Image (tube, rainbow, N blue to C red; front, side, top):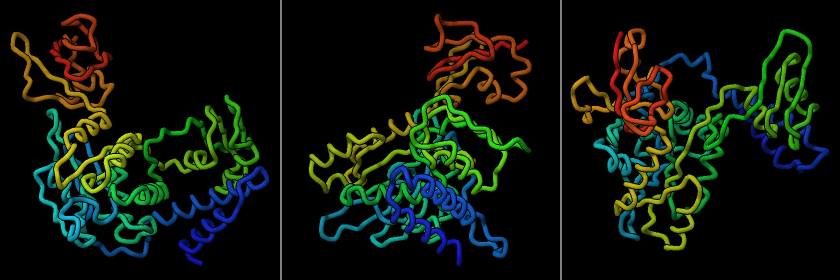
Length: 376
């Protein structure tokens, strides 16, 4: 029995089993087995050593955004002979890169990079091939697509507004099955395998979804018999399995509903009010500016401007850093030896109580601050 058959068997068993107090241990074990088999599935097979066509793209720019969607959910046209362009239309609109778009599925067969220039930052946008159902099992280059998506800072999920919620739930399921958790935070569970001493289990909150017995059963399924486990929040068995696996990626995701020119105003309003959602139309170029604003917010980037002594600040060339970056990060970005020669810095902007304020290496910078660094 192959891994795929085992996975489908377990999924059927989970669907068959009623959720109640009596079956929670059984379901917990099944979920642990499922996660174990899925992890095996994602490991590249040792026998296939032949090299295929290159797929991953070198990381460049200040941030990386992956465009994910089913084949053909991009552009627009007259209602009768409307071509179903893929994300390629969106990539061509947002960047200066021409990605092939056509009325048939699978126009994009490899990963096509483009660059969005916004607020002085270069954001790398990757147009990934359309994901089909079963991509996690390796269908339609699914594994490579998902591997590239794991390296992104933000995922943009391109959805067809005319198709309702079907695409969104299918894509979330595909990404969830390979360890990509969208718009979720890492479970607050301390887990450390040990050499001996059995399993020590504690929790600082009342647990409603997990019990000590269930935790032990799940750990035994992974052949872990000595470990320290501390629950700092009420987590589900699935979240505990994520902590054991340790290879989960938690990333922000923007759900972008395209083709809003083909649905009613009430439906547009309903989709726009959903959390983490933006409505656009590539064909009529509607709402693309708001999408860029939201993308900037989700990437959590800040622009820092530099200033030389006795001169005006250089507003043409910004240093792009993550939100919460300190003066030390700015020094490393300018030159790696600058932090060791650092004496103090003068900062103008919203992060200071008065301008200019003399600060040290640990001072946290904010968006559009101006900094002048003084060396020893």
